[in-house]
Length: 343
Image (cartoon, rainbow, N blue to C red):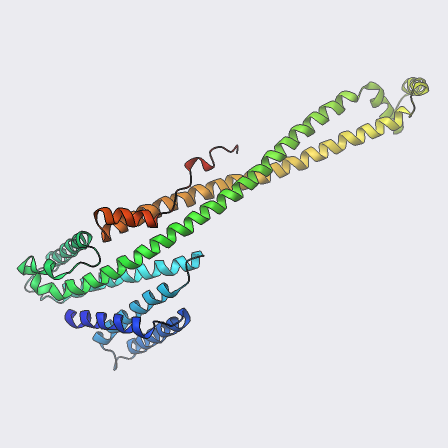
């Protein structure tokens, strides 16, 4: 069973690389839909259902999805990134499915299910370690020949090795795209933060100026102007009106008029202060929100870079890993990017 699937996987991979060499992503996506439709039709029809054919459909669909992702333009959006995430998820599902198939292919009378399941998982872990040592181009046959017990599952390990190598290759491309996408996202958030924080600084500066202006106007609002304002609104008593009448002999403009203008200026400053305070509250929330978004996105970026390094370490070794990592990892944004701003 696994020997047939192994050769089927290799043959289809070569065929698709040749047949779809000049195909567009849309053409590959159409082929995926056709395979999925055929698979679903056979699943619903009990008379035409064939387990072997279903496995072949799964392999074909996986290879086409991989090919479709590689033919897409460089990742620019989260939607594009999710397609690569979906591809990795499909590879993981295929690996789990193969393990289950290998376990169930053994006669349960010969081994306890739980015991053999652990045996298979241990062999897969050993395979992972071997691939990490030899890289993607390493030959699997020496690994299978290391222990006679592997002979009974050699075909399974050959197929699993091909799936894992394809998975790692896709994971490296995905991790590179993810690091680039998140780096750009952090840069954009930094620019947005700086713009909003600059706006907040200007608003706070304006608030200080309004406060000073209000204090100066209130100092100017002496008892004479308060009486003048009352007189202008028919609220002054006879003594107040008499005093104002005397003052008006020495002014170019009636105290009542000057008082009304002063009160208007004071009221305007209060209104401007209130409106500016509301703007400060809104922009402060924006700044805090951008700050948190940046920190969350930066955490994602750090995690993505860590995974990128792990993948590079898995598929390469020594100086080759260092060179590959240097090429794929983008420069980090400084941690203090947001630390110098007042929030």
